[in-house]
Image 1 (spheres, rainbow, N blue to C red):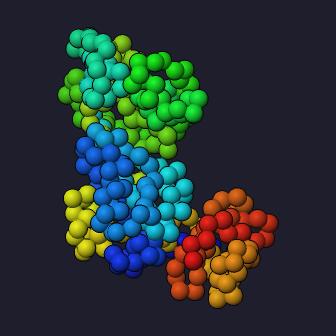
Image 2 (tube, rainbow, N blue to C red):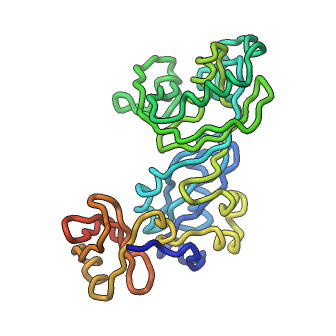
Image 3 (tube, helix red, strand yellow):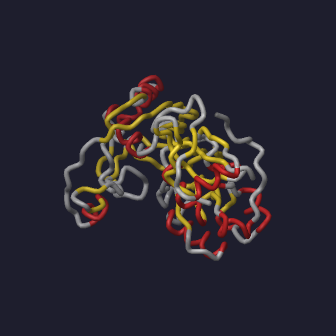
Length: 307
């Protein structure tokens, strides 16, 4: 069992649509994640494009856009840990828990808060916690997105979801504004962190700025800006090959005979040390990703064949 090298060969732009790859995009504030996907479709002239992890329109930062056959890898990228830089404002709560909503309550009591109290309201949310999703969220209740009901002025029953928040670090405080960094698991709402901090302090709060700086091992520093998709060199430098995109997975290498088996959906012998039921990248003799599979007994069974 080994891991792919961090020094993978760069992906040629023309190969993205045909062979597949993942393009890290730096989404600006304003466009939706769907807008970003549409821009990549136009730039690469292919419809086979998707993303792994939505960003709200007011948020900026790293969006992993899967292209070509690599769209099938999205499910292995979505669960990765996310890192965000965010700013909250104390003393005002909104109906969306962010700056896009209507203010529903105000309080000047934030003026009497200490830095220790503010830090405590954030650190109390670290760990595995039950987080109530915002009213305006994409979670489904009764088969409908919650934001659809909220826009009609309807109340729906919100149930907390178990999320994992690994770390919250305050990096700047000039009350009523607090800048902080969050490292969290998939499904965590950063605006809910701001809301819950305000409620714990009794003054209300909402999120005013949000930027995703990393997804798993991938940093926004490598990403291509959305307005630079027509720059082939910048796209080439940013793109991840399918194998590099799943570098966080353990992987097994197969020879030509094993590659032929994988291409036909047949299992191959498992390497020692592979955990059962955990995704594993299967790499062919040419160093390219053939499939993602999982160990079943003493074999690796392909689940998503890319070749």
